[in-house]
Image (cartoon, rainbow, N blue to C red):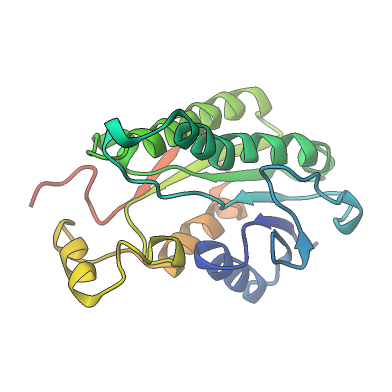
Length: 224
């Protein structure tokens, strides 16, 4: 039986790369985004469940933000906005499709996205790291609550070369500087992040749940 996978935020970056990879593997992919086949803004809309099958084997929530400012310049609205798109958007989506994930004949999987800044403590990341820290707590709590029927994991990348990061990686000089900060001397690509997400919704990952998995060029654990 072909697996039905819902990707929220599939219009660009990691989500787009993931949709392509899963489709090539024979999965039935349902794309939901503000400009996608299924129109959906996770911060405010209700998902059109009639556009989805009666059961899902996977949900991957990709929307996020990169809001880097000195702490004294961050407003409470900045924190609210980051929390809304990263955390409440994921919560809202999971709650809506949970019956479809539970309806699967096989174990289903949820994949969320955190950031290396949660574990490392980086300047100017107070708002986004706070939101993504909540994602890591949500991941582990849901993994415990929904086991054994649904597996829940999160990916914690370093800066990845996506449209969301265009302001930070907008020139070759900036890309080179970013690469130099990583022990592997490179910046991550959407395809590399998508490959791990694709693995996590596959049967090969059936013994993995409640994990925060770093894809960060060694930044979280290595010192050059």
